[in-house]
Amino acid sequence: MTMIFGVPMAVFMGQLTLGLVNGAFYALLSLGLAVIFGLLKIVNFAHGAQYMLGAFAALLAFNYLGINYWLALVLVPLTVGGLSMLIERFLLRRIAHLDHLYGLLLTFGLALIFEGTLINFFGVSGARYATPEILQGGLNLGFMFLPTYRAWVLVAALAMCLFTWFMIERTRLGAYLRAGTENSQLMQAFGVNVPLLITLTYGFGVGLAAFAGVLAAPLYPVSPTMGSSLLIVVFAVVVIGGMGSILGAILTGLGMGVIEGLTKVYYPEAANTVIFLVMILVLMLRPAGLFGKEA
Amino acid sequence: MSDSTTLSAPRVVAKRKRRAGQRRALLYAALLALGLVAPFLAYPVFLMKILCFALFACAFNLLLGYAGLLSFGHAAFLATGGYVTGYLLASYPGLTPELGILAGTLCATLLGALFGVLSIRRQGIYFAMVTLALAQLMFFFFIQAPFTGGEDGLHGVPRGELFGIISLRNHLSMYYVVFAIFVLGFALIQRTVHSPFGQVLKAIRENEPRAISLGYNVDAYKLVAFVLSAALAGLAGSTKTIVFQLASLTDAHWHMSGEVILMTLLGGVGTLLGPIAGAGLVVSLQHLLAQSPMGNWVSVILGAIFVVCVLSFRSGIVGELTALYRKNFK
Image (cartoon, rainbow over all chains, first blue to last red; front, side, top):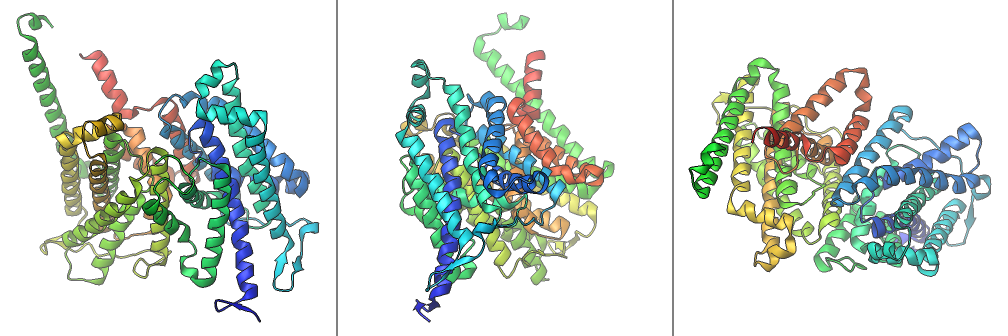
């Protein structure tokens, strides 16, 4: 068997794929955070909870309404994103003129409410969501066994990242969003409906989280606490990459996933903490973050 | 204000200041007296829990309320103090509790210096995220480290004898030790806030670029405030471990960092007494809910209080009361 640095090739490639899949989730979530932060200037602490709501919505829709995976992949982000627009309209907008730390605290409270409510109804143990039939099994690539679903997650997440990049960098709506990020008052003076743009942006960012949640449902146990621990890692990823650049967020997310996966191969004890250690290193060497502009 | 016509303006101001000082001294004296008789009116262990969390919240408030830094990782200091004290007292039977507390506080202080140096490199929202991530790092460390008992935590930490003479197994003597520690911690914070150092902190909170342009070494001030806050949080954790004779992962979890924010916000950010009121209220609420059929809804209710506080109760209990008092009695 081929060995890479003393580890069987299949194990190495397996962990590398796992790392890439995790990295795809980091990328999707940090992208959503960055989009929201750009215009609203708040860190959406409910992001992890909304990712979890996406997974739960897919599970419940399948169990009670018979909505299949593919339909859920479209409907759930729209529903969760749409409902979260109400949060922006009726809660976040009321504190938009205050110090942005209040937005962090408000969304933290929301995260506690979402998580606590679902724990009461479903417990913390987690439920399984069946992988759709087409995506079951795997491909034997000769040097490794690639589970189809993991390959699909990677493709879908990257496609969604590219779609977001295209929307923001290449469309008129995206141009509004970028202009609003620079100076929303001036935008409003030009006659753009900035409050509506803000509501849509929040909905879109949360929709990305819910999309990630549906993708994650067949992969990890669907439990109310699946989002919060992930979100803290995503925060570290955001600190490492900075929230200034979309491609930066995607690259940092994938890169951190790979580093985490490789750590699992060579030094499993540090797998949980390696991203935080990278964050410390980045803070020491490049305090503004890899792609950040501000200190 | 009939006498103001007969007095010159500076003397009136001086007189008002003196009166405000007298009123404050009176308030502190009344609270001190209340603290001294409290264990005869309520269950001492419950009161000690409130005092430990009040000290924790006061330490947190020093950073948020007076330096404007929102730390989302204060659980790390509470837990470090708790684990170090718990481990030392449980493994070295000859060690007296005050030395255990001292060691725990010292470790939390060192950790605070480390976290502080790293996190003050970023501002605002990033500062909050960095502290949260560092605290999560400590959480994983506590799970894996050999001396913390992992998921089970440390149990049966002996209370021992203070200075080798006074047994703390009695709840009443334990209470007065905790009360003394709290009063010392609070006095230190009160002194810090009203010192020239505290004034510079407030200047940084209000307008950091201006403080820099006035020639203050802003980072050094922030770091000292951070380390002081971490040390007091560690002191609260060490004391809590001795009172309850256990140290567990609950103290290191990010929920704990959130709870201390809630206590401070509910009581009043940037007021000296606010965190005490907030801690008392949150601990009492948790205590009441735990015994009621609503016990499973604690985190939902805390979350709802968070939302309500941010939306319409931002000055907190003490802040609102002070405003009410100023409006009606001035």
